[in-house]
Length: 232
Image (cartoon, rainbow, N blue to C red; front, top):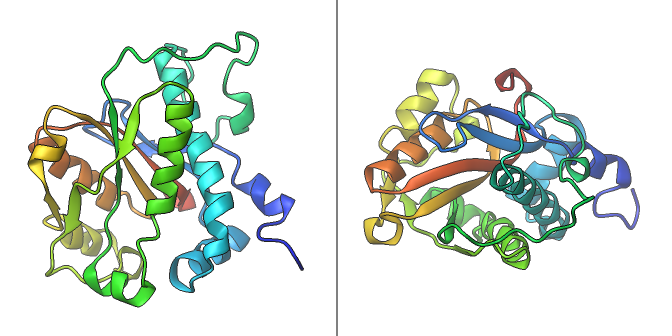
C-alpha cells in the first residue's frame, strides 16, 4: 500500500508462532513468525535480495518479539507447546503477573546465520544482523543478558543460496560441511541461531551440529518464515 512499509494485514501474518523439530537443541525446536508464502514471501525476498532495507524495522520487531516470547515461556517453565501455530505472539506471555524475568542463566550468544561470500557481495550487507541486534536489545531490556556474536561463517567453497538448491539431498549436501565455527567464542556458552527463511531445516540443523561440536549449547533457532510443508 502507498506510504506503508508493511500494511497491518501483512504484519498480522507475521504475528504467529510456527515450529519445526530442531534435533540437538535444548528446546528441540526452531521457531518462525510466519509462513513463507504470498505477500510475506514477496516482502522477505524484496528485503533480502532487492535492498528493501525499510523492512529491517518491522521484521526486527516481529522476530525479537517471537524470540522473547519463546525464551520467556521456557524460563517461566510454562507447559506451552508450539506445534504449527500456537496463537498470536502477544497472547503467549502471561501479562497478569507483569514480572521481569530474573537473569539466573548465563549470557545468551545470538548468532546470525552467515551467508556465502557471493551472496554477501550481491547484497552488499549482512541482512541478518539487524534482526539479531533487535533480539539482543529486546532480551536485555527484559533482563535476559545477551549479545550478538558472528561466531560462525560459511565455508568459502559453498556458494549456492539455500533457497536455490533444489531438493532435500541438495540442501543437505550444501550445508553438511558449510560452517566454520570460531570455537573460543562459543565453547561452554548458550547460543541461539537467527535466520531469515527455513526451507527443509537442514541448514539450521547442520549449523546446530557445527556449534555443538565446538562446545556450544544451542537453545533454539529463530526465523522470519518457514515453508508450509515443514511445520507440524
